[in-house]
Image (cartoon, rainbow, N blue to C red):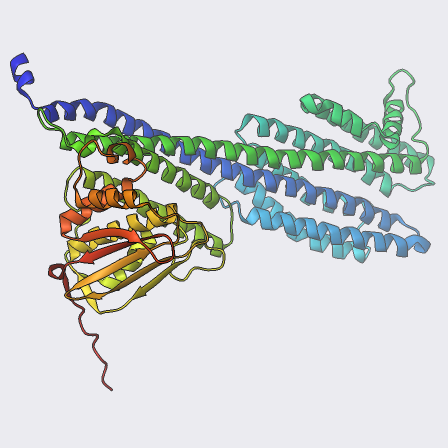
Amino acid sequence: MPQMVRNLSIRSKLIPLLAVPVAGSLLLGVAGIGGGFGDRARAAEEARAAVVAGQAVAAAHELQEERVRAVAWLRARREADRAAKAELAERRRRADQAVAAYRAGAAGLGRGGGPALDQALAAATTRLERLAVVRAETDRRLLSPELAGGGHDAPVDALLGVARGLAAHLDAPGPSRTARLLLAVAAAKEATGQERTLLAAAKDKAAEADEEVLRVRLVARTAVARGELNGMRAAAGERLAVVDRALGGAGAREVRRLELALLDPVAGPAPVGDLEAWRDALAARAGALRRVERAVAGDLAEGTALWRLDTERRLRSWLLLAGAVLIATLAAAAAALRVRDGDREPALDAGGTVLGLARRGQALAGRQLRLLEGLTRDEPDPQRQRDLLGVDNLAGRLRRTAETMLALAGTGPVRERVRPLPADAVLRAAVAEAEPGGAPTPSPGAGRRVDLLTTGDVEVAGPAAVDLVHLLAELLDNAAAFSPPTAPIVVTGAADGPGYLVEVTDRGLGMTDQELAWANQRLAGRGPAADPAAQAAGDRLGLVVVGRLARRNGFEVRLDRSPAGGVRAAVQVPAALLGPAPAVPVRRR
């Protein structure tokens, strides 16, 4: 057995050695990428949920304010009726705006949040629709202040239920803690709102029996409010100083004094006292809590957005790893295919070739990942179309990079094509596969302009057409790399005797006579192995690929100076690879 192993060729030994680590790396990459896409989708859902939760508590706040005004209007004396009605109308307008924003956000959630959240969303929809009836009956004074307050309680409770359901779906540690604080603040504000509603319905001068009933009811609601405020401080964590500072105003301090006096077990039952003082102090605390609520909702939306970016960064890392594994696999396969017992291909013996391919693949992968990041954001449809075109361009270039490696390994065309391709289509395909911005008719701001001029109705044989597209795309990439970003590149195609001549002309840095001579030798496959190509293969990789493709198909490629000061690359397609384009049938009437 050892003798049999020693007798195996080098290529046969390399293949099993490469197979195991490559398979393991690919499996790891696939698992990581699959998990990364799942994490990114969940992070995007959490970001939307955080925004809608903020919209739900904002709508609940506006309905709480409307509830107080509606009850106050029903209690108001006739002489104060007009002012109370105007204030109520203004609060209804603001509530309608907040509810509309919530509905727009909730419409984008879908029905993937689970039964509990779906039920909360449905309940909110039903109770918000019922709000119009409550308003109409309030305007006609068909409801008592207590019933009007209860009619507003239902949509407020439903909206807070939606916020609780959305918060339960936040898995990220930071946003989940922020969501718990948001719910605690909303609960404390609703408890304060219940106190305000009770006092808004109370008469300033009531009978002794009515005042005792008010005191008992206010004691119960005050006890709930004090408990919710303590729960809010417990959930504040590192934001405790911010919460205490917000509640340190004169109005909030006054209502705390009134509540503690009312609940003092040592002093015994205490009268409610001045109702207007209670109302003003409670309104001040409600305003302070709303400011805290708004800030926490903003922190929640920002935290989920940052978590989403973090998951996207992790996904980019996995994609980059998978790209590196793919490039390394192709490079190793190319090297294994060319290794011979006791001999090596001189062009692949230079590490610069594989290194240049790796660098190119890494740059392309990075650009593709940046485009993928852009696609994750919610953009209008036209922008999505432009992004998808960019991703398509990069995917084509990644494929061309893989084909480049196989071309360097000496294999045949990767994409087989049987039917011939018109010369005009060949040139357009090459422009499309080159650097972004190389559109024959770019939109404003699209990038570099490529002027495409073709004459003659000829077709290129299928296999040769695929390699010609690849060859011209490499020349266009070289022209773009050594030209100013705003300088146009001119591509012309025309019949030249029995053959077809394609020229790619740039206005770039140009080349010296020595560089032109070396490049043309390289394109023709001549020159010693120790020439500058061995050191420059990574930088002039396109010339290596162009030379391989040209020799495989019989193209003649030559570089010289262009009249504009750059470089002109001339590609002569032999007549054996050409054919006349079929005549377009004319429809007779």
